[in-house]
Amino acid sequence: MEELLSVAEMYRADALTMAGGVPGPVLMEAAGAAVVRAVCERWAPHPTVVLCGPGNNGGDGFVIARLLLEAGWPVRLALLGSRSALRGDAAVAAERWGGPVEAADPFLLQGNPLVIDALFGAGLARPLDGMAKAVVEAMSGRTVVAVDVPSGVHGDSGEVLGAAPQAALTVTFFRRKPGHLLMPGRALCGEVVVADIGIPDSVLDSIEPAAFENGPSLWRRRYPWPRLDSHKYARGHAVVLGGARMTGAARLSARAALRAGAGLVTIASPPESFPIYAAASPSLIVAETADGEAFESLLADPRKNAVLLGPGAGVGPDTRARVLSALSVGKDCVLDADALTSVAESPTELFDRLTGRCVLTPHDGEFARVFPDLAKAGGGKMTRARAAAQRCGAVVLIKGADTVVAAPDGRAVVNANAPADLATAGSGDVLAGMVLGLLAQGMDAFDATCAAVWLHGAAANAVGPGLIAEDLPEALPGVLRRLKAGDL
Image (cartoon, rainbow, N blue to C red; front, side):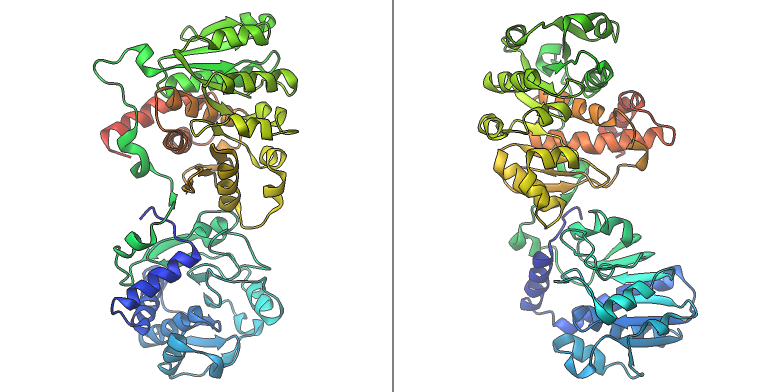
């Protein structure tokens, strides 16, 4: 169930199911029953307020209230808007509710009842205001069960429109939406349960979703495990551009590239930093590159097939020139950190040279420097990543608690396995090195980036609290062992 459906795609899944002979009220009954099952599995009966909105999400709420009442729960139902204004399946559900319908108001939440939030679903079109916002804000401090998404969270972007409650549990249907994984929606959803309500998986053949939660099922079959006849050159020769002062960044990246499986890794070092890099690891090659000409000469070897530029490289024309040199000779490139900032003033020259075998790995600040108009546009992180990938013709990875990877053809994943412990210096350098190591072995750029992001999170989880960046490459062999054995 790794597919993530947009709001429009979920509407289409519903429509295809109904066109296949399943009536809308049957789907609504199944949705309400799924919420009730999840609630009864987690809480004993106690006073509950079901808050219903004016659309189909509210219709689900009427079903939930009726089924909870039948199960012996003390239930009050409140409606935002007029009962006479309900239409379609929601009106049918309201007719089946035999109890009173109160007007939605914050005072109903006094006494700390369990709150079923069935006000607004994932397709909310405008920010909440007035009574709707007041009721949502009154949920603060209460135990909230959200139907589909917490009201106010947009299903496509995870953005909060005006206000949104903190849910303990969110029950959604058939497949999750991007907003369940993208921040801040992810943090507001609490536990997410995906319920089967009778929508057949076959509808996905018509929808052809292009967004997914990242995980091994997406790329495991194409992971570049070494073969019996492999040798170091068959596993790729990666190059990391080393900086003169911030030498730790390149060393972390190079170590990660080795652990990810690159056959050889060379650090291109300024002469003054050569002793530091040479002492880093006996597994690394260190080559002095005093200037741009020396760097180009290093890359002239066709066996050096993938290059990482940026970590600790320094911001300025020298780094920019080396980026353009690496691209000009056709190397697969990972551009991170200082490399991105160095090309930000005139990115068009960069975009003209990028290929689908290249990967950009910005955090939000670096993304805003390279794609300032996209950073200001709405629509959420996945929309920005997809637009950037299409514009530059390369894979774009926007880092964060909800890392997104997008390909120029519109495919995108959201990564959800990364712990908060990764918020430490150098973890991004390790991630860039892992992408480099997989690219050097010939893995497709999108697959390599998705795999690296997930493995990065899995390694962090294996280390746990107290993690520092140096721990991540050393935790990778254990994660890879489990991945290869099929335990992950």
